[in-house]
Length: 207
Image (cartoon, rainbow, N blue to C red; front, side):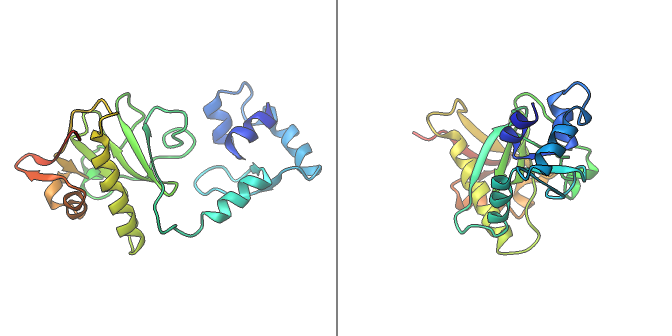
């Protein structure tokens, strides 16, 4: 079981064991992990912040993590359902604190059916509520990372209306608890092809 979890996650923590519902929790696989470490097959350390300090990882997973320390010129964007097991947020990792007015409004993201998450360069960039009218974004504080993530996010949102998607159109009325037109992402949405309106930013389905 320990080897299966390592193959699946690369880095194994207490939170992974809890998310998998392992009987006995992390303690059920700890002795096996310790034996693998003693044999030099895996590493032990603190590799991922925000989770339990006792972590074991495959050497290949650590090499991959080290390769992600610098942001690539071309952003890597993934959109998945909030409830998808591949989404670590709300299960293995805590959701980031909702920024700005979104926190005051108590609209933190949840693993809700119909909601989506957008991950840019391995980090949560946006949470799209069911119906997509409310958007919570998590942009880096400093440039150029902030611009890179914002531009990639806006472009991917525009592509949610492509022909192979069931969504007929996309209307973003609110971002982080404020009107979409007042949020810094607005300029990037317009650049990506969204049309401003009294109700927010709209993207019709691509032909």
